[in-house]
Length: 445
Image (cartoon, helix red, strand yellow):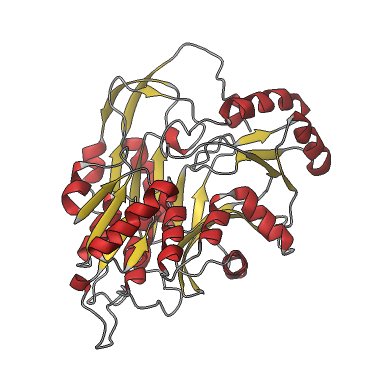
């Protein structure tokens, strides 16, 4: 994967005006981010001032950034004066973040310094699921029951209005953490106990920067699930891909992603139109977005959205199928080093990622990774466990053990290939003795 270049017809190119400064004369303030984000920024030839959380910094980022401010970037009172001082010293031209925890801070800094881009209130509405639902409802664009959890009685009141099953979720978390499917009245006591247990705690793995504070209740949505990968250019939204989610109704962990989604033309049009209307309603103006929705008996209904590139290696899938690097666009566009996409691109292939799952226990052996990685049709493969590591009960995306991402001629072939290859990755697990899982509600259908 490479950053966009002027020689790639699908990639953003530098502005053609003779008055624009060269890339080497520009400086970016990057809030948080991964190694990939920093790589793409440096590949543009710009200077990067990196604000990184002490828990997230690594030697690679320390060596690649032109300047490093190591601080909790979710703490506005600390970040603001440091960013002001950084601008005095380095004179950055844009503030960028493509990581969940940095989006709100980057939006506030853009507004503070007068830079264009998606505004703080918009970023916050996307981060907070309650604010998103309230904003949509106030504009008559929400066809479902929803409410905030206040006490145990609010669960009963919501069940009377919405019926069973319904979903309870934290308003401000990621990767399906803390999601609970409430199947019937007999679940309510245990659901309330789990809410009280989680409230006030940080997410316990993965993106540990978030504190669980409030919970939302909403109607259960039927139908297949999709995500729409889009990029907005000054308020004009271009759908780059519709991704089909591979799911299992017995838990909330995503099994994989495949694109282009296998949708009939009319269904594809309904999905993309719903997302464009959602982005307009929410006020998204610039940059990537990843919007998840279900297409069922209520029509296309948005579950949640993010003003960043989707996780689950979706960027690699999009690049393989469409030749478009959304991360590259995400860092190039605010720097004035990308041209707008004229419209939705045509797929030149298909791609799929599938996650490796195992029953709870202890890992005893791992094999087959190198053989799968050697194939020409494999985009990436990784296993995150080794012998001796525990395997937790499958509840959310952090409990997956690895993945394989592949490309093929069409979506059916990509899914079949990915399923076969993940089966060739061997992770032997010695099961634990029978025990009661305290998180059964987050697993049960």
